[in-house]
Length: 202
Image 1 (spheres, rainbow, N blue to C red):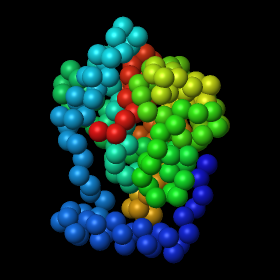
Image 2 (image 1 turned 180 degrees about the horizontal axis):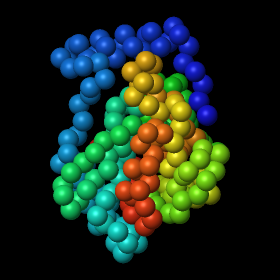
Image 3 (image 1 turned 135 degrees about the vertical axis):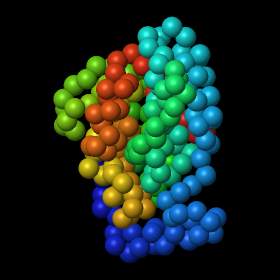
């Protein structure tokens, strides 16, 4: 769930993002990112740290929460081809209590509604309140409550290019990796079971 951003705040956010873009000579929704090499390095490091717990190492998901929610920051990394496809993803409301569009903190606590940092193993598909979804298992002390917290991959109405363009931010999840309905199919199909997702700040 997410609340609607008040009209006055939406205008402020659009102006702020536009001003920032003008100041740095880029479009309003373009921000400096670590680049493909940094994302590839994060994917490889995550696999190395996971050891034998990840059965398939061809594709890794990397969520770079150093970027604002209006930017494509969920990266599907094809390690065989060295290619990266970047999509929108929401963060948890507990990580951004002011709904600024920026992840302020990670948390693994039950009831925190926050995004947890760390490596996740993708699990089975199921159909729940958000439709087709994928369960996740946290592999690190920083996210080992993921299954108990029902942190999953699912689609949400508040994640879309239109939402990012109109409001300057996406809505917030309860800590789940919420993607757009248009992107859900490829995220689930390309990751599948027993692959890795890394949530971090690059």
